Image (tube, rainbow, N blue to C red; front, side, top):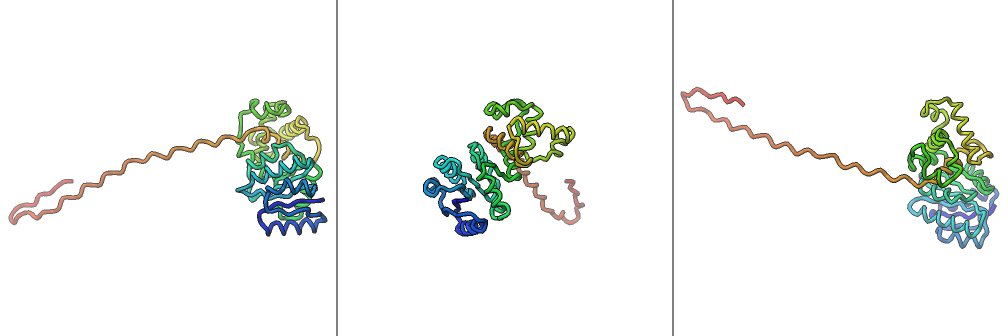
Length: 265
């Protein structure tokens, strides 16, 4: 497989290039600037691009990957970032292009994770870190169980029943089937049936179960805009400062031969 590497770190570029060569792949080009990717893709005709999309600058990397894909249809892309980036992932997967992957940096530097992921995206598959999917779901926020913007923009999502949409949204928050069953107060078997129905209605009939969960969640997230951030709560009211206590009057010794007066505070 011919692969182009894009990363601003020379250390990472060198390490990833060595990992790919050790895995039997050809490094077609090594770039420090994502802006050079579309021209490099047109010139080198690679099978895949491996790019670091660490913030800031991650949006420019996604722009370059999508532009390169327009220049070279079928170009697979595996992006990695230091921490899950919901907006970046939504743009990458929302383009509905085959052969896309998003990994965390600590996974991308592991050959046993990186090389199989590249093979999968080169074959048109999708790979996403399940932990990142949970973060994506939390960032997009829960919605009411009725038909919303996501369902209207995707007829297959609109075909899901309200209960199936509830399950899909909980999947987007990273819940397992047993956790979904607890949240919805149903049996695990009921959740499994609803998950199977979701896969069937979304046309996700092939691949392993974990990959189909990722694809189903990405299908939902790519069809809905990010939730607006909640307004910042106003600062708590400050109580006025207590007035200083009145200083006690100085004690005056009574004249000689006079009984002292006792002052009651």
